[in-house]
Image (cartoon, rainbow, N blue to C red):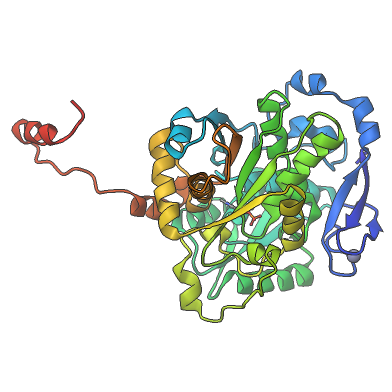
Length: 416
Ligand SMILES: *Cc1c(COP(=O)(O)O)cnc(C)c1O
Ligand SMILES: [Zn+2]
């Protein structure tokens, strides 16, 4: 890891030598990987990156904590499109809106960037079983990346997991424990098993390398915008790893002077479950004990996290960026799914569309300038949870198999 200086605890500032299996600080704080920017500046440049023939997240290898001799995993991750969405923008009142379609990754979510990193690290320490607890995407991406590299994969999922994500896990051949309980229960069991059997831990927040994988989404956004940072980046937030990773990506490029300003983050959580926003606002984080109540506002399973594992980094990212926070309801998420699909051709899972719901709300209250450059990260693909997609739309038009009937129907539509 030639460009890495050390791992630093974000709580107590304690520093550690970077080894592939480091997890939390002794004080319980999360670790963050620190780089030698002066050295990196001498070795790479924007031009050098642009000339790279590597069209995946490993394009930014010099800015990642990997050993030089390590072979990269088999699936091709990253290099997802950044679409300029004129029509969708117009619809919500923005003239310069972009979608970063992370659903285009091999297992159809941004989590692939972290899971690929986990597989590289597991290989470095020669562990042949990887494990995580997840509400879905961390698990399906780990299972897919593990399958491609023939690493064994053990997954703990909560009872409520969309069927598409469950299908992915099983198709990729993971050993799946469906825990009769919530995400917190699945997490607890996974931590016990990882400890007991010595598996590689891909639980986000505990593993500092995962952020390093995910931050490449921010690098891509900047490169795709011609090494410019947008004014705002909207991300949906559960554990808080994604938003802090994206922030780290922008910070890296800023420290390297590859970009001259930083974006403001727009953090989007759901009404029924927004502990990170409550913490920023210093509200008391009330623990909800009623399972019924929690599951109600939970169409966005990927961000329905009651006890976020990375809240400190997420809070810091939101505050440092002078970000904006907003919460959305299930109905607003469903509306956003349909709107995104109709006006941009991108099908997002609920957590992916939540960010659009959030931006839309901010536009309605004039919290964002009309001509601001806004990038919305679509964190996962809608086919993973098509039941929610179906809830967002009307029924198809039923017609008898006769031309007269069809013609009569046509007259009622405004297609002609
Ligand atoms: C994991 C995930 C998120 C949120 O990421 P956190 O690190 O938990 O905040 C958002 N959307 C999708 C689709 C995800 O899979
Ligand atoms: Zn510490």
